[in-house]
Length: 595
Ligand code: TSX
Ligand code: MN
Image (cartoon, rainbow, N blue to C red):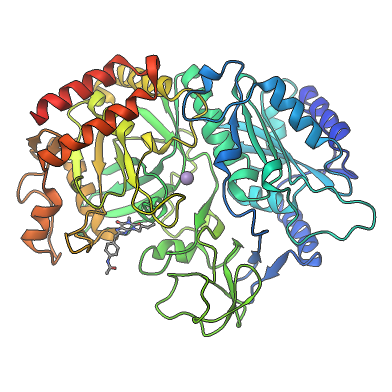
């Protein structure tokens, strides 16, 4: 592709970065198949990529063992005042952070090519979309960005001479001296990694990591942290939510957006196959929703991404057949195991493990090995268009009108299967108090309760108290046209430690009840924690579940709930004077209802 653009600001920024980082050459990307092929050929030649015999145009990458996940400790929201970043974000003053990072960026691309990646988050030209440009010295990032975003020369056309874009600077932080042999996965040590956001100037600087969430800057950095801050100023929402369309047997469509903390199976729900007769589910997105109030005064959502960057372990034909079918070709796998017949494998993919494989560190592996074959955070990068149940409207520039918001978490006790909020404000209370028990897939001790408001704790680019206020403001704007809000928990266990609810396809039963509630076709029982299905109202047809288990799933124990209140108070205290009065009022009313 030709060098440069018609946009003066872009050209100047590219030159400034090149002067600082000193790459050997600069390549402007056009998002073409040929370009993808060239990048992949380069990485094959370097031994970074392993072609997979069993999956056309698919490749396996193994990262450095130190570069396997997002680095929350090294992630910064850098505003002039620390107060603006709030209690949930790491903060360093922008002058200081830029000084440190400029030092690191100095000459950091020597011996490498700098790629200029113009991309659109959301369908190119959609009124809800935004343009970003990522500068990176990683060809792995270029290929992943091709799948996860819309990389195209058309983006530069839309940008024109004066258009706005979000500058995203990325370096793996591993310059090459002349003649120096490259590492298979070059990156910087942990203490030199920085994932920095400057929301006051819509700027992203990432250094030292090649891993997805740290390096594919369109995703968490732009579409959540920077966009959440833009959204509150511009009156829209950038949320950590899947989007799906549910169609009833009568052909009525419902659009659902749902937020869950990690390890709750968000991608599985996004691609769910309903077990109830005649209901159909289609996927619009599995991770991020951008939502704007449109001319009909309803909240319209788009998926700003173009692909899935999903956790591989646990994904199987049992848990998520639609994801498995999405992964048949054109996939980048990262930190999965390699089988002897040239396929990938991960824990939970099949009932039987392979007799031999190469693990994610490149070592021989057998079922007798003490370590897992795939890293617990091993990933697939796959085009959303390949999902067999991708919604025909997934690229509609107008988005889809949201009917239902769902929040949830992983709770082995206390929280029932499904609850409906009494009001928008009560729903905001549910989102703000959302909590999940940690699993081996997240950090920290297993089974600890972690509050993760709106599943946005790691992704809110400003003060979380102000974020709560923004939710109330959006509710006021939407009024009677606001989506209904629900809270779910698929993870309640019996005293013996067995899951009470079968989950997966059977979650469609709660979704059906939510749709009936939206239509006002069905009643609900008032409880202190919210509205719940009346006995017999949940469609349990064809499901073999004991009434004892159902009772246990729906049980609301006031003593247990009263015991939650001090933890909620402690959680709310974090937000200090920026905790909205309306949330305090919700807590007060909640306490009163508990008696
Ligand atoms: O994704 C999950 N969902 C949502 C699906 C649409 N998972 C996997 C979570 C880890 C990422 C679930 N795990 C769900 C669920 O609804 N429920 C459970 C717990 C569970 C696990 C296994 C069984 C039942 C419940 N049953 C058997 O193993 C036979
Ligand atoms: Mn996510």
